[in-house]
Image 1: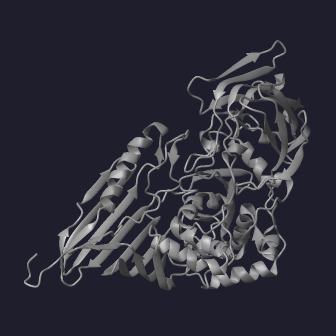
Image 2: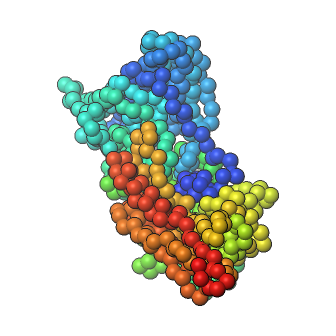
Amino acid sequence: MQLLRNQLTSDCMKQLLALLITLLLPVLPSAGATVSDNDNVVIADELRVYTIVEKKGDIASVKSETDVWYEATARDDRADAIAFYNDDIITIDKASAPGAKPYYRSWESSDAFYDGSKVCYMSVPLKKGKKTKATFVQTFKAPEHFCNVILPSYAYPKRHSTTIVKVPPRLAQTIKVETYRVDGGNITLTSQTNPDGSVEYRAEATDLPAWRHEAQAPRASVAAPQLIITGQFADTRALYRHMKSFCREEDEADEEIAKVAAMLRAGAAHDAALADSTAQWVRQNIRYLAVEHGEYAFSPAPASDVMRSRAGDCKGSANLIKRLLRENSLDGRLVWIGTKGDIPFDWDKVPALCSGNHVIAACILGDSVIYLDGTTSWSSPGYVPPSIRGRRTMIEDGDDCILGNVPDTGREADRERIRGSYAVEGNALTGSLTLTMAGVGRMGLLSALADSEPRDRDKIIKRVLTYPRKNSVADDLRVSGNLSEEEFEISARVSETNAAQKIGDKIYVDLKPLRDSFFDVVATAGRTHSHLLPFGYTGCYEFELAIPAGYRVEHLPEASTLDNEWYEARLEYAEAEGAIRCRAEVKTRDLATPLGRLEERNEGVRAFRRAADAKIVLTQISPEGEI
Protein backbone atom coordinates (compact mmCIF):
# COMPACT_ATOMS: atom_id res chain seq x y z
CA MET A 1 0.00 0.00 0.00
CA GLN A 2 1.46 3.27 -1.09
CA LEU A 3 0.35 5.18 1.99
CA LEU A 4 2.41 2.94 4.30
CA ARG A 5 5.56 4.99 4.54
CA ASN A 6 8.09 4.90 7.30
CA GLN A 7 6.86 7.96 9.16
CA LEU A 8 6.60 8.46 12.90
CA THR A 9 4.04 10.51 14.75
CA SER A 10 5.27 12.73 17.54
CA ASP A 11 5.65 11.37 21.03
CA CYS A 12 2.81 13.55 22.25
CA MET A 13 0.50 11.87 19.73
CA LYS A 14 1.88 8.45 20.57
CA GLN A 15 0.78 9.00 24.16
CA LEU A 16 -2.69 9.78 22.90
CA LEU A 17 -2.80 6.72 20.64
CA ALA A 18 -1.07 4.24 22.93
CA LEU A 19 -4.32 2.89 24.31
CA LEU A 20 -5.77 2.26 20.87
CA ILE A 21 -2.65 0.44 19.74
CA THR A 22 -2.43 -1.60 22.95
CA LEU A 23 -6.04 -2.75 22.78
CA LEU A 24 -6.31 -3.44 19.09
CA LEU A 25 -2.82 -4.30 17.97
CA PRO A 26 -1.29 -6.85 20.34
CA VAL A 27 1.27 -7.95 17.76
CA LEU A 28 3.18 -4.71 18.32
CA PRO A 29 5.89 -4.57 20.99
CA SER A 30 5.38 -2.53 24.13
CA ALA A 31 6.61 1.04 23.87
CA GLY A 32 7.97 1.17 27.39
CA ALA A 33 8.07 -0.30 30.84
CA THR A 34 6.97 0.85 34.27
CA VAL A 35 8.36 0.36 37.74
CA SER A 36 6.93 -2.79 39.29
CA ASP A 37 5.16 -2.70 42.64
CA ASN A 38 7.36 -3.31 45.66
CA ASP A 39 5.52 -3.17 48.99
CA ASN A 40 8.65 -4.10 50.89
CA VAL A 41 10.53 -0.83 50.29
CA VAL A 42 9.30 2.48 51.65
CA ILE A 43 10.72 5.98 51.90
CA ALA A 44 10.79 6.44 55.66
CA ASP A 45 11.81 10.07 55.40
CA GLU A 46 12.88 12.58 52.80
CA LEU A 47 14.33 16.07 52.85
CA ARG A 48 14.50 18.15 49.69
CA VAL A 49 15.99 21.63 49.90
CA TYR A 50 15.94 24.03 46.93
CA THR A 51 18.01 27.18 47.42
CA ILE A 52 17.46 29.95 44.89
CA VAL A 53 20.65 31.87 44.14
CA GLU A 54 20.21 35.54 43.27
CA LYS A 55 22.53 37.75 41.24
CA LYS A 56 21.79 41.41 40.50
CA GLY A 57 18.13 40.94 41.29
CA ASP A 58 17.63 37.93 39.01
CA ILE A 59 17.67 34.19 39.59
CA ALA A 60 21.17 32.97 38.78
CA SER A 61 20.68 29.29 39.60
CA VAL A 62 18.95 26.89 41.98
CA LYS A 63 20.87 24.53 44.24
CA SER A 64 19.09 21.31 45.12
CA GLU A 65 19.99 18.74 47.78
CA THR A 66 17.85 15.66 48.31
CA ASP A 67 18.33 13.15 51.12
CA VAL A 68 16.14 10.06 51.00
CA TRP A 69 16.05 7.44 53.77
CA TYR A 70 14.89 4.10 52.37
CA GLU A 71 13.74 1.20 54.53
CA ALA A 72 13.02 -2.46 53.81
CA THR A 73 10.14 -3.46 56.04
CA ALA A 74 9.88 -7.24 55.60
CA ARG A 75 13.18 -8.51 54.22
CA ASP A 76 16.53 -7.37 52.90
CA ASP A 77 16.12 -5.67 49.54
CA ARG A 78 17.42 -2.99 47.21
CA ALA A 79 16.00 0.47 46.49
CA ASP A 80 16.19 2.21 43.13
CA ALA A 81 17.33 5.77 43.79
CA ILE A 82 17.09 7.97 40.71
CA ALA A 83 17.47 11.63 39.77
CA PHE A 84 16.84 13.18 36.38
CA TYR A 85 19.20 15.71 34.88
CA ASN A 86 20.31 17.38 31.68
CA ASP A 87 23.88 18.61 31.24
CA ASP A 88 22.72 22.00 29.96
CA ILE A 89 19.85 22.50 32.40
CA ILE A 90 20.19 20.44 35.58
CA THR A 91 23.52 18.92 36.57
CA ILE A 92 24.31 16.11 38.99
CA ASP A 93 26.95 17.45 41.38
CA LYS A 94 26.92 14.51 43.78
CA ALA A 95 25.23 11.13 44.00
CA SER A 96 26.03 8.79 46.88
CA ALA A 97 24.60 5.95 48.95
CA PRO A 98 26.27 3.23 51.05
CA GLY A 99 27.22 0.25 48.91
CA ALA A 100 25.89 1.81 45.70
CA LYS A 101 27.56 3.18 42.60
CA PRO A 102 25.89 5.88 40.49
CA TYR A 103 25.21 5.10 36.84
CA TYR A 104 24.39 7.74 34.24
CA ARG A 105 22.14 6.93 31.30
CA SER A 106 20.10 8.66 28.62
CA TRP A 107 16.38 8.81 29.21
CA GLU A 108 13.84 8.67 26.41
CA SER A 109 11.51 11.54 27.16
CA SER A 110 7.84 11.08 26.31
CA ASP A 111 7.56 14.77 25.61
CA ALA A 112 7.32 16.18 22.10
CA PHE A 113 9.23 19.20 23.39
CA TYR A 114 12.33 17.00 23.68
CA ASP A 115 14.77 18.12 26.36
CA GLY A 116 17.56 15.54 26.24
CA SER A 117 16.80 14.20 29.73
CA LYS A 118 19.16 11.77 31.41
CA VAL A 119 18.91 9.74 34.58
CA CYS A 120 21.33 9.05 37.41
CA TYR A 121 20.60 5.68 38.99
CA MET A 122 21.80 3.91 42.14
CA SER A 123 20.79 0.46 43.37
CA VAL A 124 20.92 0.89 47.14
CA PRO A 125 21.27 -2.27 49.32
CA LEU A 126 18.90 -2.33 52.30
CA LYS A 127 18.87 -4.31 55.52
CA LYS A 128 15.47 -5.12 56.97
CA GLY A 129 14.37 -2.48 59.45
CA LYS A 130 17.42 -0.25 58.93
CA LYS A 131 17.18 3.14 57.23
CA THR A 132 19.72 3.83 54.48
CA LYS A 133 20.28 7.30 53.05
CA ALA A 134 20.81 8.22 49.40
CA THR A 135 21.87 11.75 48.49
CA PHE A 136 21.66 13.74 45.28
CA VAL A 137 23.06 17.24 44.91
CA GLN A 138 22.04 19.10 41.76
CA THR A 139 22.22 22.55 40.18
CA PHE A 140 19.58 24.14 37.97
CA LYS A 141 21.87 26.03 35.60
CA ALA A 142 18.78 27.23 33.76
CA PRO A 143 16.67 28.25 36.79
CA GLU A 144 13.57 28.95 34.72
CA HIS A 145 13.14 25.16 34.60
CA PHE A 146 12.58 25.13 38.35
CA CYS A 147 8.82 25.68 38.14
CA ASN A 148 7.17 22.60 39.64
CA VAL A 149 8.03 19.82 42.09
CA ILE A 150 6.08 16.55 42.06
CA LEU A 151 5.63 15.47 45.70
CA PRO A 152 4.96 11.68 45.48
CA SER A 153 7.62 9.17 44.45
CA TYR A 154 7.10 7.20 41.27
CA ALA A 155 8.38 4.03 42.92
CA TYR A 156 7.80 3.92 46.68
CA PRO A 157 5.31 5.20 49.27
CA LYS A 158 6.55 7.99 51.54
CA ARG A 159 5.89 8.00 55.27
CA HIS A 160 7.16 11.53 55.64
CA SER A 161 8.59 14.14 53.29
CA THR A 162 9.77 17.72 53.73
CA THR A 163 10.31 20.02 50.75
CA ILE A 164 11.87 23.42 51.39
CA VAL A 165 12.23 26.27 48.92
CA LYS A 166 14.53 29.09 50.06
CA VAL A 167 13.97 32.47 48.39
CA PRO A 168 16.60 35.23 48.85
CA PRO A 169 15.51 38.70 50.09
CA ARG A 170 15.66 40.53 46.74
CA LEU A 171 13.37 37.91 45.16
CA ALA A 172 10.99 37.44 48.09
CA GLN A 173 8.26 39.59 46.51
CA THR A 174 8.69 37.96 43.11
CA ILE A 175 9.06 34.23 43.61
CA LYS A 176 5.95 32.52 44.93
CA VAL A 177 5.32 28.88 45.85
CA GLU A 178 1.82 27.41 45.79
CA THR A 179 0.31 23.96 46.01
CA TYR A 180 -1.52 22.17 43.21
CA ARG A 181 -3.79 19.12 43.53
CA VAL A 182 -3.28 19.00 47.28
CA ASP A 183 -6.21 17.62 49.22
CA GLY A 184 -6.88 15.11 51.96
CA GLY A 185 -5.01 17.05 54.65
CA ASN A 186 -1.76 15.07 54.49
CA ILE A 187 0.16 17.89 52.77
CA THR A 188 0.62 21.34 54.27
CA LEU A 189 2.50 24.36 52.94
CA THR A 190 3.71 27.13 55.23
CA SER A 191 5.98 30.11 54.69
CA GLN A 192 8.24 32.03 57.01
CA THR A 193 9.87 35.42 56.47
CA ASN A 194 13.31 35.58 58.08
CA PRO A 195 14.90 38.68 59.67
CA ASP A 196 17.02 39.28 56.55
CA GLY A 197 13.91 39.37 54.35
CA SER A 198 14.39 35.95 52.82
CA VAL A 199 11.40 33.59 52.68
CA GLU A 200 11.38 29.88 53.36
CA TYR A 201 8.51 27.78 52.05
CA ARG A 202 8.08 24.40 53.73
CA ALA A 203 5.82 21.62 52.45
CA GLU A 204 5.27 18.75 54.89
CA ALA A 205 3.72 15.53 53.58
CA THR A 206 2.81 12.33 55.38
CA ASP A 207 1.65 8.96 54.10
CA LEU A 208 2.03 9.69 50.40
CA PRO A 209 1.29 6.63 48.26
CA ALA A 210 3.59 5.96 45.34
CA TRP A 211 2.41 7.48 42.08
CA ARG A 212 2.43 4.31 40.02
CA HIS A 213 1.36 3.88 36.44
CA GLU A 214 -2.19 2.62 35.92
CA ALA A 215 -3.92 2.03 32.62
CA GLN A 216 -6.10 4.89 31.43
CA ALA A 217 -5.22 7.12 34.36
CA PRO A 218 -4.31 10.82 34.35
CA ARG A 219 -0.61 11.60 34.14
CA ALA A 220 1.22 12.74 37.25
CA SER A 221 1.91 16.11 35.62
CA VAL A 222 -1.81 16.95 35.74
CA ALA A 223 -3.10 14.94 38.69
CA ALA A 224 -0.30 14.44 41.24
CA PRO A 225 0.08 16.79 44.21
CA GLN A 226 2.90 19.22 43.51
CA LEU A 227 4.42 22.60 44.25
CA ILE A 228 4.20 25.29 41.59
CA ILE A 229 6.93 27.92 41.60
CA THR A 230 6.22 31.16 39.74
CA GLY A 231 7.98 34.49 39.37
CA GLN A 232 10.82 33.43 37.08
CA PHE A 233 9.04 35.62 34.53
CA ALA A 234 7.13 38.79 35.36
CA ASP A 235 4.29 37.92 33.00
CA THR A 236 3.41 36.01 29.84
CA ARG A 237 5.11 38.60 27.67
CA ALA A 238 8.41 38.11 29.52
CA LEU A 239 8.07 34.35 29.19
CA TYR A 240 7.42 34.74 25.47
CA ARG A 241 10.49 36.91 24.99
CA HIS A 242 12.55 34.19 26.66
CA MET A 243 11.15 31.50 24.36
CA LYS A 244 11.50 33.72 21.31
CA SER A 245 15.17 34.39 22.14
CA PHE A 246 15.99 30.83 21.10
CA CYS A 247 14.56 31.37 17.62
CA ARG A 248 16.48 33.09 14.87
CA GLU A 249 15.22 34.49 11.61
CA GLU A 250 16.47 32.80 8.45
CA ASP A 251 17.12 35.13 5.57
CA GLU A 252 19.27 32.91 3.37
CA ALA A 253 17.57 31.49 0.31
CA ASP A 254 17.19 27.72 0.12
CA GLU A 255 16.69 26.13 -3.28
CA GLU A 256 14.93 23.02 -1.98
CA ILE A 257 12.53 25.02 0.21
CA ALA A 258 11.73 27.31 -2.72
CA LYS A 259 11.09 24.33 -4.98
CA VAL A 260 8.70 22.64 -2.51
CA ALA A 261 6.92 25.93 -1.79
CA ALA A 262 6.33 26.50 -5.51
CA MET A 263 4.98 22.98 -5.92
CA LEU A 264 2.59 23.50 -3.01
CA ARG A 265 1.42 26.86 -4.36
CA ALA A 266 0.71 25.35 -7.78
CA GLY A 267 -1.50 22.67 -6.28
CA ALA A 268 -3.54 24.88 -3.95
CA ALA A 269 -6.83 26.49 -4.94
CA HIS A 270 -6.63 29.21 -2.28
CA ASP A 271 -4.52 30.35 0.67
CA ALA A 272 -6.32 28.28 3.32
CA ALA A 273 -5.82 25.15 1.22
CA LEU A 274 -2.17 26.09 0.76
CA ALA A 275 -1.68 26.39 4.53
CA ASP A 276 -3.20 22.96 5.02
CA SER A 277 -1.26 21.27 2.21
CA THR A 278 1.97 22.81 3.53
CA ALA A 279 1.48 21.20 6.93
CA GLN A 280 0.46 17.94 5.26
CA TRP A 281 3.62 17.91 3.17
CA VAL A 282 5.78 18.37 6.28
CA ARG A 283 3.91 15.63 8.15
CA GLN A 284 4.49 13.15 5.38
CA ASN A 285 8.03 14.06 4.37
CA ILE A 286 9.71 15.02 7.65
CA ARG A 287 10.34 12.11 9.97
CA TYR A 288 9.69 12.90 13.62
CA LEU A 289 12.99 12.60 15.44
CA ALA A 290 13.40 13.70 19.05
CA VAL A 291 16.89 15.11 18.94
CA GLU A 292 18.15 17.79 21.26
CA HIS A 293 19.05 20.89 19.31
CA GLY A 294 20.39 24.19 20.50
CA GLU A 295 20.58 25.73 23.93
CA TYR A 296 18.40 23.84 26.44
CA ALA A 297 16.70 22.13 23.49
CA PHE A 298 14.49 25.21 23.00
CA SER A 299 16.10 26.41 19.79
CA PRO A 300 14.26 25.17 16.69
CA ALA A 301 16.48 23.61 14.06
CA PRO A 302 16.82 25.87 11.00
CA ALA A 303 14.21 25.10 8.36
CA SER A 304 16.94 24.41 5.81
CA ASP A 305 18.49 21.79 8.12
CA VAL A 306 15.13 20.09 8.64
CA MET A 307 14.52 20.07 4.90
CA ARG A 308 17.99 18.71 4.16
CA SER A 309 17.84 15.89 6.74
CA ARG A 310 14.12 15.21 6.23
CA ALA A 311 13.87 14.85 10.03
CA GLY A 312 13.13 17.02 13.02
CA ASP A 313 11.27 17.33 16.30
CA CYS A 314 8.13 19.41 16.87
CA LYS A 315 10.09 22.68 16.87
CA GLY A 316 11.93 21.87 13.66
CA SER A 317 8.77 20.77 11.85
CA ALA A 318 6.96 23.92 12.96
CA ASN A 319 9.88 26.03 11.79
CA LEU A 320 9.80 24.41 8.37
CA ILE A 321 6.04 24.97 8.03
CA LYS A 322 6.57 28.62 8.95
CA ARG A 323 9.35 28.99 6.38
CA LEU A 324 7.37 27.31 3.58
CA LEU A 325 4.37 29.54 4.29
CA ARG A 326 6.50 32.66 4.21
CA GLU A 327 8.14 31.49 1.00
CA ASN A 328 4.64 31.69 -0.46
CA SER A 329 4.03 35.15 1.08
CA LEU A 330 1.73 33.79 3.79
CA ASP A 331 2.03 34.87 7.42
CA GLY A 332 3.57 31.80 9.05
CA ARG A 333 4.42 31.87 12.75
CA LEU A 334 5.56 29.60 15.58
CA VAL A 335 3.12 28.70 18.34
CA TRP A 336 3.94 27.41 21.84
CA ILE A 337 1.31 25.19 23.41
CA GLY A 338 0.71 22.64 26.17
CA THR A 339 -0.89 19.35 25.15
CA LYS A 340 -4.08 18.14 26.78
CA GLY A 341 -3.50 15.47 29.41
CA ASP A 342 0.13 16.53 29.88
CA ILE A 343 -0.07 20.21 30.83
CA PRO A 344 -2.69 21.49 33.32
CA PHE A 345 -1.84 25.19 33.13
CA ASP A 346 -2.38 28.08 30.72
CA TRP A 347 0.35 30.51 29.67
CA ASP A 348 -1.43 33.55 31.04
CA LYS A 349 -2.43 31.95 34.36
CA VAL A 350 0.93 30.32 35.07
CA PRO A 351 3.62 32.17 33.04
CA ALA A 352 6.23 29.43 33.44
CA LEU A 353 7.83 26.71 31.35
CA CYS A 354 5.61 24.08 32.97
CA SER A 355 2.68 25.56 31.01
CA GLY A 356 3.91 24.21 27.67
CA ASN A 357 5.54 21.19 26.09
CA HIS A 358 4.96 21.45 22.35
CA VAL A 359 5.50 23.75 19.36
CA ILE A 360 3.25 23.96 16.32
CA ALA A 361 2.86 26.54 13.54
CA ALA A 362 0.11 28.95 12.60
CA CYS A 363 -0.95 30.68 9.42
CA ILE A 364 -2.59 34.07 9.93
CA LEU A 365 -5.15 34.80 7.22
CA GLY A 366 -6.92 38.08 7.92
CA ASP A 367 -8.70 37.65 11.25
CA SER A 368 -8.36 33.87 11.15
CA VAL A 369 -5.68 31.68 12.68
CA ILE A 370 -5.10 28.25 11.14
CA TYR A 371 -3.18 26.03 13.57
CA LEU A 372 -0.86 23.48 11.93
CA ASP A 373 0.78 20.63 13.86
CA GLY A 374 3.69 19.25 11.87
CA THR A 375 4.09 16.07 13.92
CA THR A 376 0.72 14.37 13.39
CA SER A 377 1.92 12.42 10.39
CA TRP A 378 -1.31 10.61 9.59
CA SER A 379 -3.91 13.28 10.23
CA SER A 380 -6.26 14.27 7.44
CA PRO A 381 -6.35 17.82 6.07
CA GLY A 382 -7.92 20.28 8.50
CA TYR A 383 -8.09 17.74 11.32
CA VAL A 384 -7.36 19.10 14.81
CA PRO A 385 -6.06 16.31 17.09
CA PRO A 386 -7.58 15.97 20.57
CA SER A 387 -4.20 16.73 22.17
CA ILE A 388 -4.39 20.40 21.18
CA ARG A 389 -8.13 21.09 20.88
CA GLY A 390 -9.18 24.04 22.98
CA ARG A 391 -5.67 24.56 24.32
CA ARG A 392 -4.22 27.98 25.11
CA THR A 393 -1.64 29.17 22.61
CA MET A 394 1.18 31.69 22.62
CA ILE A 395 1.58 32.88 19.04
CA GLU A 396 4.76 34.51 17.80
CA ASP A 397 4.23 38.21 17.12
CA GLY A 398 7.55 40.05 16.89
CA ASP A 399 8.60 41.35 20.30
CA ASP A 400 5.19 40.59 21.75
CA CYS A 401 2.89 37.59 21.52
CA ILE A 402 -0.74 36.86 20.82
CA LEU A 403 -2.61 34.62 23.25
CA GLY A 404 -5.18 32.47 21.52
CA ASN A 405 -6.98 29.15 21.69
CA VAL A 406 -7.03 26.26 19.28
CA PRO A 407 -10.68 25.76 18.25
CA ASP A 408 -12.38 22.91 20.07
CA THR A 409 -13.84 21.15 17.07
CA GLY A 410 -15.63 18.56 19.21
CA ARG A 411 -15.54 14.80 19.07
CA GLU A 412 -17.57 14.27 15.92
CA ALA A 413 -14.35 14.09 13.89
CA ASP A 414 -13.20 11.04 15.91
CA ARG A 415 -15.42 8.21 14.80
CA GLU A 416 -15.49 4.68 13.53
CA ARG A 417 -18.15 2.74 11.70
CA ILE A 418 -18.37 -0.98 11.04
CA ARG A 419 -20.83 -2.45 8.55
CA GLY A 420 -21.20 -6.19 8.29
CA SER A 421 -23.25 -8.60 6.23
CA TYR A 422 -23.38 -12.21 7.45
CA ALA A 423 -24.81 -15.62 6.64
CA VAL A 424 -24.80 -18.70 8.87
CA GLU A 425 -22.53 -21.48 7.60
CA GLY A 426 -22.20 -24.35 10.04
CA ASN A 427 -20.80 -22.91 13.27
CA ALA A 428 -19.51 -19.76 11.60
CA LEU A 429 -20.78 -16.42 10.44
CA THR A 430 -19.41 -15.66 7.01
CA GLY A 431 -19.68 -12.55 4.93
CA SER A 432 -18.06 -9.16 4.62
CA LEU A 433 -16.97 -6.42 6.99
CA THR A 434 -16.13 -2.80 6.25
CA LEU A 435 -14.43 -0.58 8.82
CA THR A 436 -14.39 3.17 8.27
CA MET A 437 -12.21 5.34 10.52
CA ALA A 438 -11.86 9.09 10.84
CA GLY A 439 -9.88 11.18 13.27
CA VAL A 440 -7.74 9.74 16.01
CA GLY A 441 -8.56 6.10 15.22
CA ARG A 442 -7.48 6.62 11.63
CA MET A 443 -4.25 8.22 12.84
CA GLY A 444 -3.58 5.39 15.28
CA LEU A 445 -4.06 2.68 12.69
CA LEU A 446 -2.00 4.36 9.99
CA SER A 447 0.75 5.14 12.48
CA ALA A 448 0.83 1.53 13.65
CA LEU A 449 0.99 0.28 10.08
CA ALA A 450 3.77 2.69 9.19
CA ASP A 451 5.83 1.73 12.23
CA SER A 452 5.46 -2.02 11.70
CA GLU A 453 7.31 -4.46 9.52
CA PRO A 454 5.63 -5.12 6.15
CA ARG A 455 5.06 -8.76 7.09
CA ASP A 456 3.02 -7.70 10.13
CA ARG A 457 0.70 -5.23 8.44
CA ASP A 458 -1.93 -7.71 7.29
CA LYS A 459 -1.99 -9.16 10.81
CA ILE A 460 -2.62 -5.73 12.24
CA ILE A 461 -5.40 -4.96 9.78
CA LYS A 462 -7.08 -8.31 10.38
CA ARG A 463 -6.88 -7.90 14.14
CA VAL A 464 -8.43 -4.45 14.00
CA LEU A 465 -11.13 -5.52 11.56
CA THR A 466 -12.22 -8.66 13.43
CA TYR A 467 -12.05 -7.38 17.03
CA PRO A 468 -13.26 -8.82 19.43
CA ARG A 469 -13.35 -12.20 17.69
CA LYS A 470 -10.31 -14.34 18.44
CA ASN A 471 -11.00 -17.13 15.94
CA SER A 472 -11.76 -15.14 12.84
CA VAL A 473 -10.37 -15.54 9.37
CA ALA A 474 -10.13 -12.51 7.09
CA ASP A 475 -9.03 -12.49 3.48
CA ASP A 476 -9.42 -10.44 0.32
CA LEU A 477 -8.34 -7.35 2.26
CA ARG A 478 -9.09 -4.08 0.54
CA VAL A 479 -7.89 -0.67 1.68
CA SER A 480 -9.25 2.56 0.28
CA GLY A 481 -8.73 6.20 1.07
CA ASN A 482 -5.61 8.30 0.95
CA LEU A 483 -3.96 10.92 3.12
CA SER A 484 -5.99 13.76 1.62
CA GLU A 485 -9.29 12.12 2.54
CA GLU A 486 -11.00 12.39 5.90
CA GLU A 487 -11.92 8.72 6.14
CA PHE A 488 -9.88 5.56 5.79
CA GLU A 489 -11.66 2.34 4.90
CA ILE A 490 -10.77 -1.35 5.23
CA SER A 491 -12.95 -4.20 4.01
CA ALA A 492 -12.55 -7.95 3.83
CA ARG A 493 -14.33 -11.26 3.54
CA VAL A 494 -14.56 -12.81 7.00
CA SER A 495 -15.44 -16.07 8.65
CA GLU A 496 -16.11 -15.84 12.36
CA THR A 497 -15.91 -19.37 13.75
CA ASN A 498 -17.88 -20.49 16.82
CA ALA A 499 -20.29 -17.61 16.33
CA ALA A 500 -23.24 -19.93 15.62
CA GLN A 501 -24.27 -23.07 17.49
CA LYS A 502 -26.90 -25.55 16.29
CA ILE A 503 -28.67 -27.46 19.04
CA GLY A 504 -31.60 -29.60 17.96
CA ASP A 505 -33.88 -27.52 15.79
CA LYS A 506 -32.42 -24.20 16.98
CA ILE A 507 -29.46 -22.06 16.00
CA TYR A 508 -28.00 -19.71 18.60
CA VAL A 509 -26.17 -16.80 16.96
CA ASP A 510 -23.58 -14.77 18.85
CA LEU A 511 -23.48 -11.65 16.70
CA LYS A 512 -21.46 -9.43 19.06
CA PRO A 513 -22.64 -6.18 17.54
CA LEU A 514 -20.74 -4.00 20.02
CA ARG A 515 -17.26 -3.81 18.46
CA ASP A 516 -16.01 -0.88 20.56
CA SER A 517 -12.65 -1.69 22.15
CA PHE A 518 -12.71 1.32 24.51
CA PHE A 519 -16.15 0.60 25.95
CA ASP A 520 -15.15 -1.75 28.69
CA VAL A 521 -15.16 -2.36 32.42
CA VAL A 522 -12.26 -0.81 34.34
CA ALA A 523 -10.53 -3.10 36.83
CA THR A 524 -10.80 -1.51 40.27
CA ALA A 525 -8.95 -4.02 42.47
CA GLY A 526 -5.95 -2.19 43.92
CA ARG A 527 -6.54 0.84 41.71
CA THR A 528 -5.47 4.16 43.19
CA HIS A 529 -6.19 6.63 40.39
CA SER A 530 -9.24 7.92 38.60
CA HIS A 531 -9.99 6.78 35.04
CA LEU A 532 -9.52 8.90 31.95
CA LEU A 533 -10.24 8.08 28.33
CA PRO A 534 -7.63 9.76 26.12
CA PHE A 535 -10.20 11.10 23.67
CA GLY A 536 -13.90 11.16 22.95
CA TYR A 537 -15.43 9.43 19.95
CA THR A 538 -18.53 8.03 18.27
CA GLY A 539 -18.78 4.38 17.29
CA CYS A 540 -21.51 3.02 15.02
CA TYR A 541 -21.85 -0.72 14.29
CA GLU A 542 -24.43 -1.98 11.79
CA PHE A 543 -24.97 -5.62 10.82
CA GLU A 544 -27.32 -7.61 8.65
CA LEU A 545 -27.74 -11.36 9.21
CA ALA A 546 -29.52 -13.41 6.56
CA ILE A 547 -32.08 -15.76 8.09
CA PRO A 548 -31.16 -19.28 6.88
CA ALA A 549 -33.63 -21.01 4.60
CA GLY A 550 -35.96 -23.18 6.64
CA TYR A 551 -35.59 -21.11 9.80
CA ARG A 552 -37.47 -18.30 11.41
CA VAL A 553 -36.67 -15.89 14.21
CA GLU A 554 -37.74 -17.18 17.61
CA HIS A 555 -36.01 -14.55 19.71
CA LEU A 556 -34.26 -11.23 19.18
CA PRO A 557 -32.38 -9.63 22.07
CA GLU A 558 -34.14 -6.73 23.73
CA ALA A 559 -33.28 -3.20 22.74
CA SER A 560 -31.06 -1.48 25.26
CA THR A 561 -29.96 2.05 26.07
CA LEU A 562 -27.35 3.62 28.31
CA ASP A 563 -27.64 7.23 29.32
CA ASN A 564 -25.28 8.44 32.05
CA GLU A 565 -22.51 10.98 32.59
CA TRP A 566 -20.00 8.99 30.60
CA TYR A 567 -21.87 7.40 27.69
CA GLU A 568 -24.87 7.67 25.45
CA ALA A 569 -25.41 4.28 23.86
CA ARG A 570 -28.21 2.33 22.25
CA LEU A 571 -28.73 -1.11 20.78
CA GLU A 572 -31.63 -2.24 18.61
CA TYR A 573 -32.69 -5.22 16.49
CA ALA A 574 -35.27 -5.52 13.72
CA GLU A 575 -36.45 -8.23 11.31
CA ALA A 576 -37.18 -7.33 7.70
CA GLU A 577 -37.08 -8.99 4.28
CA GLY A 578 -35.59 -12.29 5.35
CA ALA A 579 -32.84 -10.72 7.43
CA ILE A 580 -32.11 -9.44 10.91
CA ARG A 581 -30.71 -5.96 11.19
CA CYS A 582 -28.82 -4.77 14.24
CA ARG A 583 -27.41 -1.37 15.10
CA ALA A 584 -25.28 -0.41 18.08
CA GLU A 585 -24.02 3.12 18.72
CA VAL A 586 -21.78 4.55 21.43
CA LYS A 587 -21.02 8.21 22.07
CA THR A 588 -18.72 9.37 24.82
CA ARG A 589 -19.59 12.19 27.19
CA ASP A 590 -17.40 12.93 30.21
CA LEU A 591 -14.02 11.26 29.66
CA ALA A 592 -13.02 11.35 33.34
CA THR A 593 -14.37 9.08 36.08
CA PRO A 594 -13.39 9.74 39.71
CA LEU A 595 -12.01 6.72 41.53
CA GLY A 596 -15.02 6.61 43.85
CA ARG A 597 -17.46 6.40 40.95
CA LEU A 598 -15.76 3.75 38.85
CA GLU A 599 -18.16 1.04 39.99
CA GLU A 600 -21.09 3.24 38.98
CA ARG A 601 -19.56 3.63 35.54
CA ASN A 602 -18.75 -0.08 35.36
CA GLU A 603 -22.31 -1.05 36.25
CA GLY A 604 -23.68 0.81 33.23
CA VAL A 605 -21.03 -0.65 30.93
CA ARG A 606 -21.67 -4.21 32.18
CA ALA A 607 -25.43 -3.93 31.68
CA PHE A 608 -25.07 -2.63 28.14
CA ARG A 609 -22.46 -5.25 27.27
CA ARG A 610 -24.70 -8.02 28.61
CA ALA A 611 -27.45 -6.81 26.32
CA ALA A 612 -25.05 -6.71 23.37
CA ASP A 613 -23.82 -10.24 24.12
CA ALA A 614 -27.32 -11.74 24.16
CA LYS A 615 -27.83 -14.38 21.47
CA ILE A 616 -30.24 -14.44 18.57
CA VAL A 617 -32.34 -17.64 18.50
CA LEU A 618 -33.46 -19.12 15.17
CA THR A 619 -35.92 -22.02 15.04
CA GLN A 620 -36.27 -24.57 12.25
CA ILE A 621 -39.57 -24.56 10.39
CA SER A 622 -41.26 -27.94 9.85
CA PRO A 623 -42.05 -29.08 6.30
CA GLU A 624 -45.69 -28.19 6.89
CA GLY A 625 -44.66 -24.67 7.82
CA GLU A 626 -45.27 -25.23 11.51
CA ILE A 627 -42.86 -25.36 14.43
